[in-house]
Image 1 (cartoon, rainbow, N blue to C red):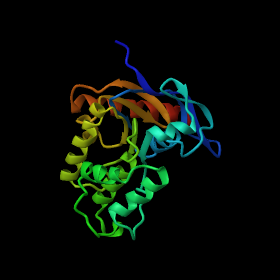
Image 2 (cartoon, rainbow, N blue to C red):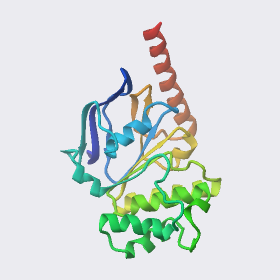
Image 3 (cartoon, helix red, strand yellow):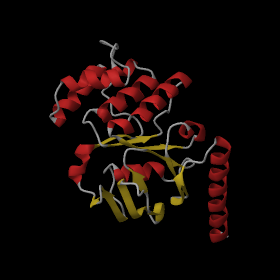
Image 4 (cartoon, helix red, strand yellow):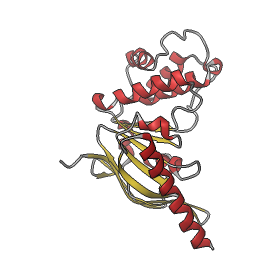
Length: 241
């Protein structure tokens, strides 16, 4: 059975000063799954996610959301946590979320729901600047979930989390597809994604080198990843040689 896609991209490209950060990327992100975008640091993952989230403009190519050309109105159905969470350090978790609900015209009752979801309901009057890195990540995730997104974009979401925090976040992410939330998750840590994602894409040097089902075990995933990355490095060396 053909999978339904929430996002597809065609030849998506981003060029900075003659350098292609992302080069002709054609992604297929299935609906109600967790898609893992893998690649070494600097491979082009964050740039790709920023284009899908509407934070930067593609230089070339197209993005389709639910088979329609991406439009700004689609942002109402997209939540994103890319790089550092956009937090007000002098405000509490509740107050940070209140700013966003007010801006988006969302009901204040949603705040308690997302704080419960990310396990931050008992932070009281503690200000965000006093939060640990893990708590800041979870508050960033709460902000991304406020508008009940259909698509959630997470860039290296376990950064700064301890093993317990990683496990809790993994379980939370795994629960999203059943709630009608499709997830794109980027990472350079293979062990993080193998228990979390359904489908993977591997980016090397800004190009999509593999896209398909997650291999059956960690050894197979590691071999696939290393083979793909090495092949790209060899191609680059020959090209520039």
